[in-house]
Image (cartoon, rainbow, N blue to C red; front, side, top):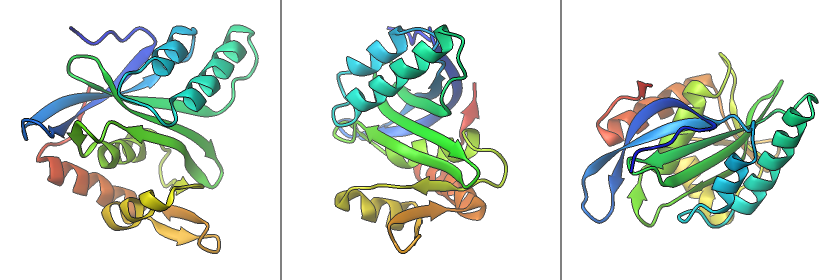
Length: 188
């Protein structure tokens, strides 16, 4: 089955690791354009995504309605990662403001693949931010704190309630993700 990019804008290819075969596999990082409701439906019915897909789907539907009604759409952006057979294996919802790019939701299929979360954060840092912006995690689960701080080098700020990664840290995260997967990000 080939990847269908209806409503999806392909951005880059990366490598992740299949936990079953222990082999590297290609994945495609893309952005949903939210011009029609099918994008929201695809997220809502994604088989490998469970925790945040309903919330992400709802925000996508709101943006679609705004676009279709010719209103100024909200500033949320929706990125995904698809396996080579087209399955959605990662989702990220972001929001830009003058402080940086906020990661509202991130979810990955970590039971079948490795390196998805780190790759997706690095790809958002590389392709989803303006120059010299920072990535900001406003809310995180206790279980995710170690992933953000140890594997991705985010630092606590705002009295420790939020995590941030500045431009230098983003460059290091991109390098670390590419080194870990033994493959460069390749623009599509």
